Image 1 (cartoon, rainbow, N blue to C red):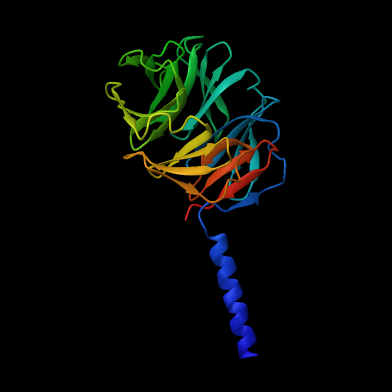
Image 2: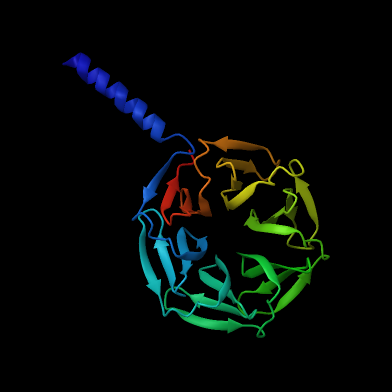
Length: 264
């Protein structure tokens, strides 16, 4: 009996260790529940998504429990950024709106159509940072919609824009990663030129950049050095959205299924 108990404990320990490995993942919620998701963004551990129907939802990614916010008024949304306890959307006509998730209050900010050329954006400390198709970087007051240009028109090749450590990071079309100062728009390359050319999705979490490659590999990058390591197996080729939660990162697959990814 003692010998069998010891064997069982060893098996349980091995199983637990395998599940605890970085890069392992588990399904959250109902399979395919996010199949109609057009846009996704997270803030303070909450996932916000907009569906094909124009409905806005908030989801607890650790449980998969979701709740609709307000009416289905987001059918013309072309960009979604969550941050500072609000959800910000840019419509197809270039107008910027702020939604309060607690009461569904939907308010236009700034002039109609002012963000028509936006190709990427993030929210950071009361400002919305956006890159235009002209290559210009702007910061906009999240309270008033008043905007200001930062630096030169250097960002015409931006593919992805991230926010972490009080700085901005961009992955360019050539696959190079850059760190951008929010103060004056100056930038410097991080890591090897072209190292992220195969990136299909990414997010930042606790000082690191997490990216999924077209091969299905998930990488963690040190944003100070550009040094990266692969996490787990190449299981993520079907990733559609990658975002951060409270203690994990999450992926929504092309199948519409939500997964939690272990980081430690």
